[in-house]
Each structure stands twice: as structure tokens, then as C-alpha cells.
Image (cartoon, rainbow, N blue to C red; front, side):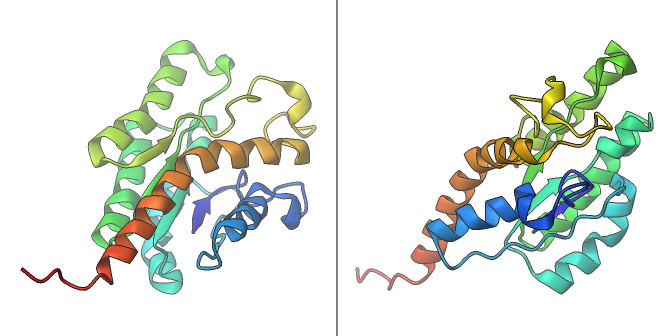
Length: 194
């Protein structure tokens, strides 16, 4: 399940061109066992996600969640503490429900000032370390500073950038899927006779 904001909710582009749909295609080449649910909402904040995570988990019952929230908080200059606390609550809820979390790290434009942008960026690293979860260091790595990969608003990635986002996510996600498959297989292995 992808649980994010407009970066995952196909803002300004067609659904089939978005990175979540492209990821679904890539997953299906690996295995028919995986489905992708996109529970992302444009404009979503970390608090909004915190308020709806329980319902999303009970409705969709995911094995893995790709958590892509926090950018809207950062763009609004929300306190770094509140962003951390909200994302931490979402991760804790997922772990309580035995859902693996892949956290998508974000960065802010330099015009937000070096102190705030560094503190914001470090939130994702701290969460990954504290909760022992996988991290995509920067969802927009490889093109985040290149204007030609963004829509006219300069914030939302264009259609051509979606493939790059999939590559960034896939690099980490594929390791989670492999270990998830191994766990599932070992569950069905008969006990070795002593």
C-alpha cells in the first residue's frame, strides 16, 4: 500500500503514468502475488495520515506500506518535532499490525533556509534508525534539482520523472519483497525431523 500525498496521487498526470502504476507493472513482472493499493491523497499532511492510518490498514490489510508523507508539512514550515511525531505514530501503528514500512525520504528547496531544511531531511533518517525500517533516502533523487523534470508549478514531478521515482523506490523495495517471500516460504516448510 502506498500511503502518501500528491507526489504519489498522480497530481497533474494520468493515473497510469504515475509512479505507483509503474511500480505495479514492475511488481507484476516479478510475481502475481503482489497487488498495489494507492491510498494517497493530494495535499495530505503527516497529521492527516496519522488520523487515517488505522482505517487504511483495516480496510486494505497490506503486508508492506510505502510511507510517503511529510513534504506538505515541510512546505508549510511545520515544526520538525510534529512531523517526526506524526510519522512515528504512523510507523508504530504499522509495526503493531505487523506491516513492514518503507519510508520515503524528502528534501525541501534551499529557500527554506539551511537550518530548517537540514532538520527536516534528518527526520526521515532518524525515523529509519529508531524504528529499524527501510528508507528511500530521497524520493526524488537524481532529478530533484532539475527543473525540466517538474510540472509548471515547479513542485510536482512531471510524467517523465515518474520512471526515476520508481527506480528509487524499487532499489529498496525489492530487498523487502525478497525477504518477505523467504519468510513466507519458510513458514510452509515442514519441521525437520530430529
